[in-house]
Image (tube, rainbow, N blue to C red; front, side, top):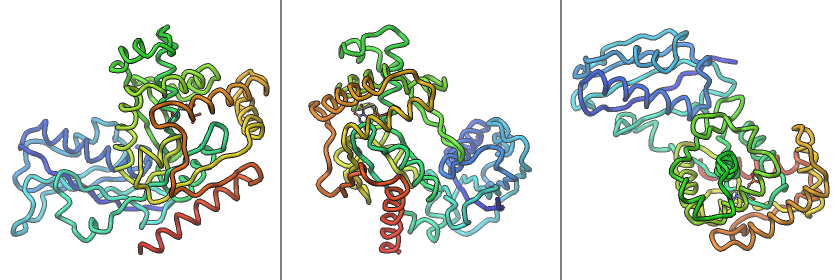
Length: 347
Ligand code: DC
């Protein structure tokens, strides 16, 4: 672990304590999320505020979101001619395994113009990884994300969360009308830290509860409803705007991120996929049989491929990978190399 520095700035619309608090928290959360930080990774934060901001202390706002161990300090900002008005700036020192050049700075609400040097080349990369159940997408995506410091977004977990909500409330997930009625009550969020990713359903951690065979079947069913897809796809697109991402699912390359810089479509023979999924479930302690998993996968393949809205399909510009004979390492290296190649071409 080494000490790294992350810059940030945000503007606020009025000089009130609430605005200072809200602006500071929005900025800190963005930095934390973009860099996959845990609160404990933060060593210290220096804040500066322009002269026209004196109704509150950014350091006090930081404490409100649990940053209590780090050293915090507020300073007045040096005045510059034509400088940005009502601006809060930060310099956050953190512990990180990543090199300094991988730190993601954050300039929000017009504060971007302040540091054109840092902003102009800030172009995020999106990797779309599609394929049927059990093709190894999530294992590979997690490994690639870890190696390159990308954010991994598991879109299947979102459909699973909707299915889990229905099951837990005794709502028949095969009944579209009933599912759509409760859609507004479902709030899904992902909290990423460097070590793990947690899926919250209405602020409760459901990460482990959404992996059962019953939830898998429910997810495949609710994923056929346009109303469900519209809501989740909007969320997925929004998440992709915030940094470098690798997103796995069924319709990422064709629908969610049609302009993704890199698109991969993974497939493998159904028996091999069922075997892998069975072993994965077994490791997690889920009681099931290989035959049941094979049936479930065949059923989901059928559902996911033949549904009306955004079915599972390889995008014309996606690289096809048959993973039946390839090792996890080989697939991971192939994708990592593709991303590095892309970055080199852009540099
Ligand atoms: O990837 P997974 O097995 O966790 O996905 C669960 C179900 O969610 C899958 O059978 C189909 C659906 N899904 C989808 O329709 N679109 C996505 N982008 C991701 C998943």
